Length: 507
Image: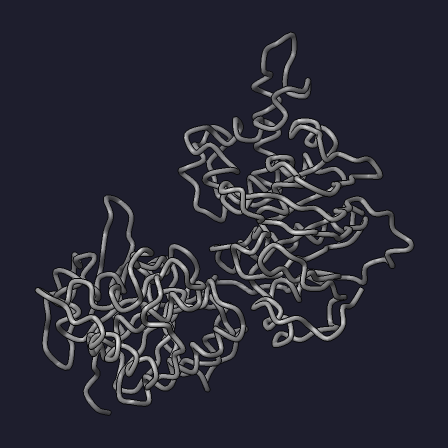
């Protein structure tokens, strides 16, 4: 076999007492697409940041085209043809596409029109429809990602690292990106993409390197493996897919939640919700699909009471609660797992027991004569740790000491307890690994079986299809349509997520 373009040899990286990477070795050849697969915290991003010069290796060496290299910064990496497109884009929103691409690479007086033509030519060569003179802040997220890719192409990168590249894309945008990856590699370049999505791996990768707990546990060619084996290597055990039974007909189940023509404004008094109407019934999981930022968060906030309604009604169990306070809604049995657990779901410097107490501190459940019964609270928190398989030593652990998946399990347990009739999950598995996702999916389905109404917001269509009975698609604060699961395929929903109306709305 020809000499590898990239060789990572016995690389280890330590952060204080934490082992991020241990004796990691793998190669990437010319024209090859390698997927780096693993759970959160498996060490995937760390090893790529070492290759890109953001971190230094504590042990081992890196070779590029047979030469041992010491990459001390991204500038060193880029000089050797290595570019990295990170999960969070590094673009200046007030600058144009061309200005972002040439930023830091040109000096003196700039003939901007000449550079625009050059960038346009590169974009067209890969079929990217990007307005080179538009401000980046005005572009959709999928187009912004193309700008990040164009930055790498402008620098003639031949080794492209992509960190969770489809996290914010519609299905069509993801498909186009996978096409670009294959085309880029076919031109003699190589791509390493970090992911935990099996579909992407099986679609685009030639070879898959699987990591667990900072160690490489598998290095296989795509044609020699399947999704079940990859999942087993990733998490070290078999996963059983959750089983969703048929939901009762809506005529037989009461409507627990109804939104009737609800509109709301954002911070700049611009409309963020426009005439949103839907209902969620007992024993039903109602899904909202859409690209992030199209009004899904605002729908959840309107239901939970943290965002005022400018028009319309929120009806809960037959009662208009549009003007009720957040506390009244909590007392009424509405549980809410927010999209950002760090900002809205937990207080990181509090213990697990204190976080469990947060939403019920006004009631008498944990207090006696004005004092908190610490024993009762600790016993209950310990029960949650056992029942939800939270990796923690006990109720006195600080929230920040837990991994993201275990933090989410604690939030989920608290909200299930609060939400006796209605549960709202806003991207409950975002950024979590397969093991945590599997556990959370099973928990949500268990609550549905108890007859609770469930509203599930997700940007992952695979999750929507797996979990939901009916699906609403949102675009720019509007409901594009509501359908029973199975009435539309991925392509049709993806088009609606991009604002293309369907021919006929379902029920």
